[in-house]
Image (cartoon, rainbow, N blue to C red):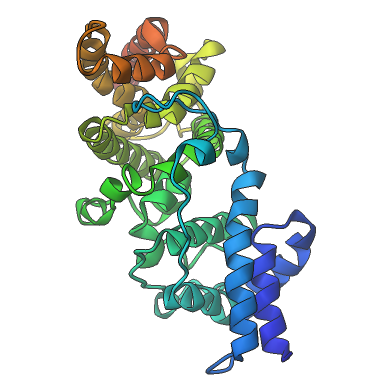
Length: 350
């Protein structure tokens, strides 16, 4: 086996295995020239490694423990017990992604941006795990502005804090995100990622207390707001509001500690102009305002009766909603109001 093929397969393995973290980081950080083609044996091994690796990746992130009900009468169970087993296809896009990492990913130059058209579920999941590794090893300088990652709904849902560093989620980019497939054909995948997404969004919220750049705070809040609004609309159409569980869970865990309203903005410079401070402070509440926007739909579902067609679905959604619930809604409203009061205080002292 050629050295380049060994590196390719080692990278594919290292995306999932903690024991390979040091080698993976080395492969990511040090550009390596790749041949025009790989041997058929190496490509066959790569397909096998990827097919098995994505399952390992889901297991590492806690996906195997995710238990959800479905509105189809199938009851509770693990996602692989309740969903049709899907064959994960990996196309030439996957090869282009891995080659890009090996050849040039550490360099943030515009010429190094990656532009791929990802359609297959296997490729989409690989892209998500690749971005996770790039963030982990702090090598995502070129990725944050690459269309391949910025046009991925999974990448935005998992790492909106990272991607927002290259600018907020634009309307054009938002229109490119495929929430329809994520809530239909790939709903099993979205279920499996609920736990890691909860952890990520919890980390994003707690990390806001360290943000000292008002532009970034605003860009992050705008990205969260647009992302969650579009996701909630699609979830309501597909009758899968239960898949907003990660948002309800993250919000509830933050509110459980009764944080001070200044927590989100305490690191912003005191010398900011009023408009900048106001925009940043209000943007910091994007998650809670997104949950508030979902509440009218939740209220309608709560009114469903036993004999109504949507009764089973309503009970499913309410089960996931109750972790946040009316109490969380009241706390969040109070926080939003108090943050607005901080805006006024900033204006008075300016």
